[in-house]
Length: 295
Image (cartoon, rainbow, N blue to C red; front, side):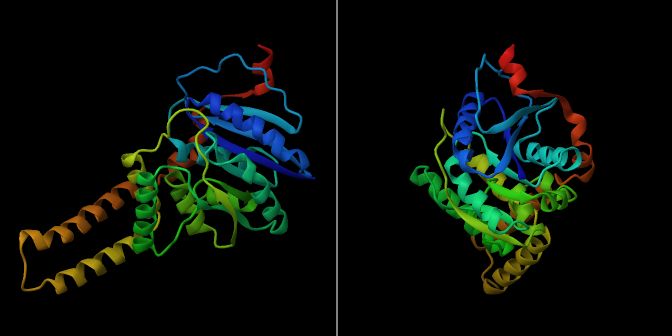
């Protein structure tokens, strides 16, 4: 029987993640696989309230507590590094723990991975549940990414990785900055399963314009060589187009491209292989949820 680990990184949102776990336990009841959960706790400031969760199908739930808050992407990277170095598994499914990666889509991903056991399965979003403003922002994000990288990325964290693919990813510094960008850059052998972006179980979305901008730039920065080439190409063509008609107004787009390029290069400096290699030193403890239940 194949072993699947579901990796969920969270900060404070315990109520949502425990509801996600209950949903997962129902969804996997028909799976012919052993399923366990690893939650990466990104130094949450909220304590876990008294909980009584009984699972019929999930084998185990562990919480890997981090000493310092590092952010979602870096927690995913640290979780993958821990699993590939310390655990025996066949596939790891990375997903968000707030309900936006819908547990009901897990079976589609699982079945696709059974059909393609050596390939990465990405949950490509075919529909979003946010309001029209954020849908527009996400479309702009996809277009901007495509223009500067040539890659059309339709998925976020929701992905199933064979162990070999996960092992390849944690050797690359870009995984420390962007998960989805790294998957597209490093892993070419991929298939997709359709997924609907769900709504958060509790509270408003944590994504805002600034966070989306950083998220978008982090993905683009993974492909910085392509970004540099395309930026200078766009800049050259634009300057040629406006030659003989230089003014403050006509030079603003050129300035915007330069600012964008500097921002991408700045963000790309977050791809720190030493921090990635030492990320497990940030683990303070690993708790079994059953132990917390009994307290």
